[in-house]
Length: 377
Image (tube, rainbow, N blue to C red; front, side):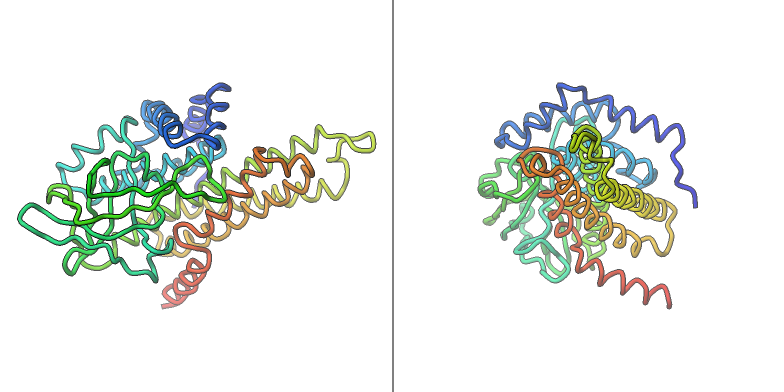
């Protein structure tokens, strides 16, 4: 096993950092208080920059270079958590769906502008709740002479109000299909933006479909079984795991910088054992989270038979560590940490989403146990 960073990986991470100067980062911070139009405008500007750097095209077709992709994802997530989530749902979930399962014509229509950062896409997957494991799909596409008519609803769709394309998971006969629907379809209704605890720089809304027409040329599938749904969920989980690494970095750096500069009793508070011990615990969680996340990426890249189980391990450990590190950071920052807008406070609010989105911590633990039984077999 070897997932050490070489010069190529280091160069990619430095390039991602270099894409965003001080003014750009200040603008990204405003995402947290922006309205839908502001968020779309800022996201499109960043997508164009990332597209020119080749970030959006990485790993879409073959899933290779998973370790390098995770490294670049961690870097972007540490710069702007909300931007990262919007970008990754667009590229690594929606884009990969098209790249892996789409038809030749669908790839030709959608992938070039997506890789260049000229469009935003998303996937409408879950319905009443946020899981698909125990919540069957009720959205249905009925076949007709002119294609399909889609009816149903999706409860939590990230990027929905700003997306140019929405891939809607639903039933089609005895199989599962993804219906590619353009924005402004008159039979698709994007609901009001949901007011959320964290990730205020993203937009999440419900969507309803009422006999919404979708031509056959814009349908992926139908597929028998749920392999494609599982693949999408695994891609989401990888994104959320990488997001956690960025959050842990932000919280730790905020606490460390404050502990070095804030004085109490005539000396910086890092000189106090209780504060330094907290920082030591935070650094330990950061290093461990990075190790398990990169090991999971390496195993996925090499096709290891335990890759799926370890991916769930990484999702659980990294997302729960993000909350724990943010909590310790808030404690170190004291009153300053309790003020809205600082990195630790934002991360603390964001962290819970990472645990319930994708495969939740509870379901992940069940899958880890199931995976151990399969390994024993």
